[in-house]
Length: 95
Image (tube, rainbow, N blue to C red; front, side, top):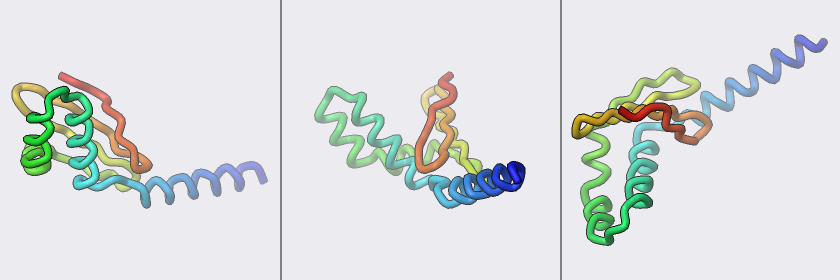
């Protein structure tokens, strides 16, 4: 009986994970807001609002693994990897 409950809970968790796997568009919006929150310049914020989504989208690749996604941003000799899981984004490496 315990095994059945554990398997059921795991199945529910995987179904929820698959349904809440964020898209690339959601990642781009999140990354844009992160850039704006780190910026201390209103002119830079305006530039991010104006061009941010297109620029971030053009330097981002994603791998969709059904239950989660990995986003990789490569720009200016820097590389950032982020995991998208349950509609949240978790940075995992910066180079």
